[in-house]
Image 1 (cartoon, rainbow, N blue to C red):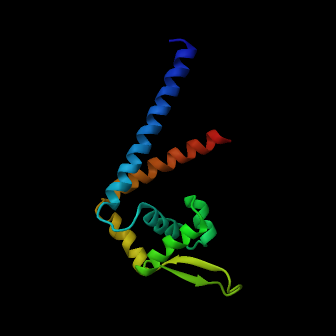
Image 2: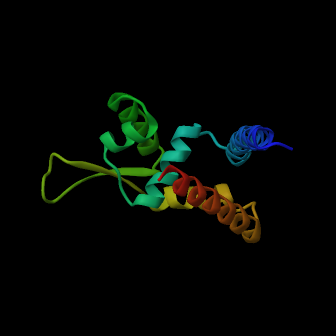
Length: 139
């Protein structure tokens, strides 16, 4: 096999694998949310809040590529459900951070409780490897 053919084969495999990972990721999200009344974005926001501790509306709108109004509306629904709360900072009362409530944290645990810990660890480890490799390639 020539170098050009090897390159084409490698490109094809990367494209195919990326498409498969994207499809499987969407399927996984669909699977963990099928019993949920929340939208995918609402669930992903709960995950983001669990990871970051807090976000403001601007952060949320940038991460989800939505308008600040849409981000605020998404938060309104989660707040009504008792899953998040808005907290004003002590330094500047005009600044409002969105944080996960205990009920929101419990909801995340409920979403993942059907999966055995070893399976979650395998998925996590594989995704970490993919992220590291892609980051190396971008630099």
